Length: 432
Image 1 (spheres, rainbow, N blue to C red):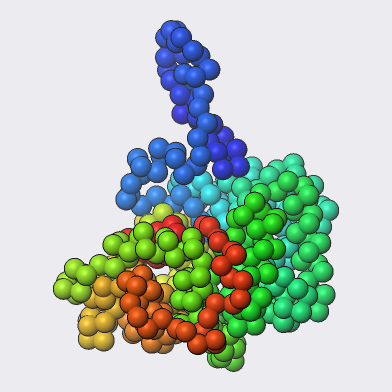
Image 2 (tube, rainbow, N blue to C red):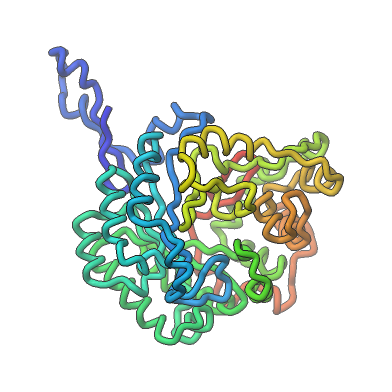
């Protein structure tokens, strides 16, 4: 069987053996060709729970031309030290070659802002030449006519653009970059005009919370209703305490997060639909000392801009990263990753809390996030617990949901109903 990328669809050529051997088919076109969505492709069932690196994220740079209040990674666009440490094109090619040889089909190109790389077109073309499906994360402010020509000739699987505000005031309050709203609108218009498959999303923070209904309308009008939001702000992977204080100051309260979910009909319906899977009352009777229950390192991996392999973008502890400049991707995947996933904890706080919590699937807690928050893999995080318990109240329909003006969803919120929502579960990710 051979497959061809059709921007979200798979063209399968079946029964080639019968054709070559002269097998008779009544309807050749139906026998040899079929079109299906990638999600329906039978390959995923055949792979099952086996560890195959089907996809990987490639961080081209930590530099960004914006300075967003909530960003967990960004460094200034002109940071020479950061630029000097970035993987060169030849190093990237070596990593991509090995990933493809191991079975990779999909690559997410991210940053920072990946379009800051002068060699972005070369990197992008190489990924396409290797037959990979390519998704690009960008703020769209640097999109120019040359990028549009490139994407028109060699289309990406999709381009995901973050929308920080539907007005210049809100957008630039978040980005702290004067003129960025105009550049964003211009770049987004270029992408939409050239026919690129664009997905729009929003990080929700205090600086844009009240503008969320307008952001949702802006996004849905341009993407046939496709829009998602994320209210969970991650702390810095470099541990910068000043920036971490800014991020914490921008976090919504647990009540505000739940109010958003309650006011979004699609998201609320999904929470109720997945309730039995997300709340596991049996789990509280079988305390586990395992740390990793998520899907990190099972079918995907992350490579940062300096060539460090991680199971996911958030798992930044030095003991959980592997330098690909000194070793191979195969060793990182087949030897290093299983050792990380086998990590255990005997800490009482963990065993009596997160390690046996029946609602951990409603929580942001994971070893990576726990480390960013506390410096330890196995400590509970009070903020995460508050969100999880408020979600539990929501889906069980109990009393006690927020009624105060401060904790209500922004006025007009019910008018936006996102899709592509996800919740983390013990076994991986559940689409909401």
